[in-house]
Length: 204
Image (cartoon, rainbow, N blue to C red):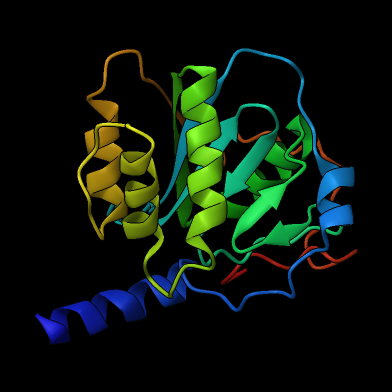
């Protein structure tokens, strides 16, 4: 079992579910970045998968509540306008959402986005759980995300595996699913990866 986990962790480290943590943003930076469009509360589970074999490479969770924040456990995405504290990214405007998606989509990888309307209370419980989790360890993206979701009352199983969490969440009533790959990814964001404080995607 230990050997299996080490192999699993090594694979996810190569694929983007393991990254060093930047210095935490200040409370003032987080407050300035807070953004909401006032739309109904919703959560979106984001799963990055390998095109070759549909293997899960990364899990993240976007929450639209009192503000729009992204739980990106051990993720490698960075943007100068997106302060980060403990793997929670703030200021996730539609433009930043497009940048994040395009960052992960490339010929070898695609994304599945699964969205579910939730109550305002559930959205806030998720945000609170994200903040309380702190930085995720390497290769624990699905484990920490499923734990956060369960703590907020979302009925999914606790799992190490992005695919298992994606499949479990997809069974809930009301979930809508979208696949995004190189054929339909929205690149209209004016960001050049590798410049301006935004890193190149892993393996690019």
